[in-house]
Length: 285
Ligand SMILES: [Zn+2]
Image (tube, rainbow, N blue to C red; front, side, top):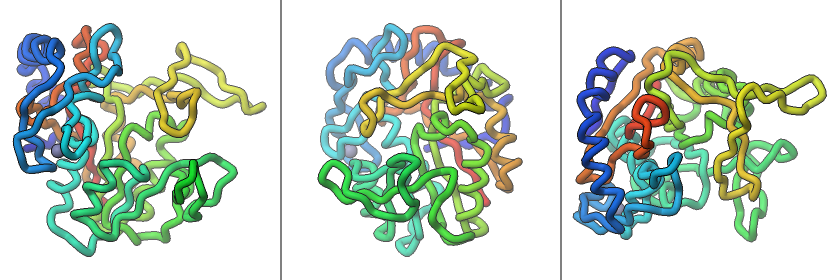
């Protein structure tokens, strides 16, 4: 179950209380190959693969691990699945969009929301809402800076670890707000730096189109582009205000720390620098 917070203070109280459990419990977990836990999506005790080869500094990144061997969802994807199903509930006619295509997460969400539309960002030279052949598969293109949907036409829009790769992230949030119906939900994850009050801008585009690096360039693995994808932002608490300024009436961060369910942190070795708890952002139009 998620605990939802509107601001930093109460959240940080919980985060600091969890610290010994995160540091000691996850050290044990990170030393194992597999874990028997409860998958909320499969509604069963399952075997989970603890590590997937992703690293968080020098430690196995458990945010990308804890993979259910049955539904194939990672910690992060399963966490988003849980936040969506908890937030939207049973709404079989929901008009829902997931900005990720042909993934185990989409497959699981489509079981709940049969009208789910899946898409990927295929590049600037593509038209939003159009379907392209991509690596032999039909994939719909959508861009967070220009979604194809008309105003107030979706009940849910979800994305996971996309926003940090959008330079003009406030425009992206406003675009999500535009396509949602009143009461519609934006539910998403991104790397969240809970000890940072402000967002950190890592780079910006110069007039000639090149990137001016304000921080050492950081690229994240990306299934579509071999070189990875540039990271413009490290988000802190300022993001909640960004959501309100984008027009959302309610903006919250949900924490669901539950090792039995495979919901643990990224296991970063430095708690106050890079540790990311299992959190999801949720905003209501
Ligand atoms: Zn599962």
